[in-house]
Structures are given as C-alpha cells and as structure tokens.
Length: 353
Image (cartoon, rainbow, N blue to C red; front, side, top):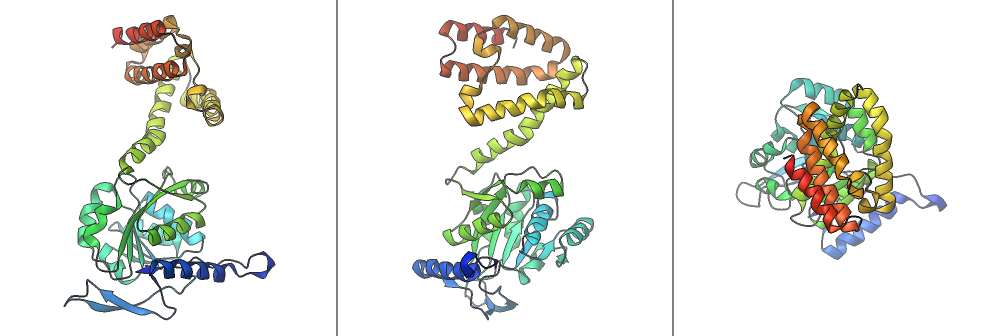
C-alpha cells in the first residue's frame, strides 16, 4: 500500500534539506510497516481487485516528497475553502467535480489550475487522493458509485459519519478515511483564515492518517485522531459549539430587543462577557468559571427571569430552562449550593414548565 511523501520545504537551518529528511523518515516508517513508497517514475497502477476486470491506469503519481494529486468532489462551502487553503499551501488541486456549473466555475476561479467535471467518477482518472466534501446524506450513495484504483485513497469531510461509509468504493490496495476541520464554513475567506489554529479530526489507517495530519499542518491546523466509535459524540459537541452557540446568541439578541437593543448592540454589550467567560473556563476550568444567580441559589431572581421570558420572549424559555438545569448540576458538583438550595431551584423551574 502506498505512502505519500511530505511537501517540499525550504532547506532547514544549518543547510539540511527538510524535504530529503522527510523522505528519509517516511521511507524508514514505510520499511518498518512493510509499505511501498511511490516510485519516482511510477506510471500506472491496477484498477480493481486483481481479478479478470483489473486493468492498468496510466496517469502519473506524484514524485516522492511532493504532495499527492488531489481531487475534491463538491464545490460548496467546505470543498471550496479546503481547495483554496490547500492550493495556497502548495498542495495543488488537480481536479474538482460538482454537478453545479456555477460552483464549478467559482471553484476553478478561486483555486486555479484544476480540471472541472460534472460527475465525481471522472476525477478518479486524474488524482490519487479524493476528498468528498458533500452533504452527509449523500456520502453512502456517492461511495457506491465510485470504484477506486489501487494506490488511491478516499476521504470525506463529514463530522458525524465514520470512514466506514466509504467502504463500497474500496478495491485492493486502496484506503479510506475522514478529514473534518472544526471550522464554521460560512464564508470562504473567513474559513480559510480560521483553519489556522483549528483542529481537524482524522480517521484512517496509520499511513493515511500520517498524510492527513501533514495535510492539516500545511493549512495551519492540528490533526487529532478520534477514538473508534466516538465520531457522533464529537460532532454533536461541534454542533453545540457552532450552531448551538449561534442559537444561544439569537436568544440573547431576542432578550436584548425586549430591553430596547438591536442585534448589533446586544453583540457589543454581551460579547465581552461571553469572551470573559470563555477565558475563565480556559484558565480555571468550566465548573469554576460558572457565575450568576444559580451559583448563589437566588430563587427570586430565577423566578423573575422566568416570568419575564413567559411574558416577552416565550421562544427563549425552553433554552433558558435547559441551561439553568445544567448550571444547577455544575454548581452542585462544585459544592456552592446546599441540597436545600438545589431542591428550591429545581422546584422553581418545574413550576414554570
């Protein structure tokens, strides 16, 4: 099975050639694992599982020390941002596939140097590593429509699904995995900038994970390997951190409107408090960062809040109540509430449900 080398870099201090060092390191790892590095002049590899329908495929492999030939299926927010980030980092995108002509045109314009196709199957003849940046619900069907060539790898960008969804596309000598950047892809340039310092969750065989970790590094991110079977929990936490937090901001803005504030004013007023709370959580821990009336057992304030929400912002009530229940748990675990205070707070919430 193939191992790709690392991208070429400038010579290291003292005159050492970093690319040569990387190639030597990868060669040593490959030898220990019984793997075969891509030969410098390799052209062609078997398609299929070696059976009667296997055939030679003539496109070139990337040379040792160069990134693999990359292709992206899906030219939406995630695929385009990854294409831009990788190409700027020196990992050229050889091909893109999207059934949306406008998205294909935009991707090609932003990334440059790519061949654009309407069908995903077409890029298999062009690339070594295929990234599927499509909606989760489309992955299984798409994987069944693909058949990898020996030496190719296929990864998806889903945060919720494991790599096993891609198994129908596998043939002998192929690999599958996942590459999920923990970034909000609302805007291309903002997403590309946010990749610097972001976390990317990766899955796959050891040699593929090593390549994906390098791919994360070149765009400024850090790869983490998730425990088997934990993908859904990891993604649920990510949804709370992104969409869930945005829903919380919307609730804050709704209450701000009751107080006569527009959205921008609410963000300006409450944003610094949010940032301070996050800073406290990082420095002290989540439980120790908890402040407010719940930590004091202030039933009267809780009653006033619930009454105001019922009268002026009933759509926020369920979210406030759920957050208050969690705050009670945190305060009780921290030891700042007596058992009687916990009971009175919970009874107050129950009476308003």
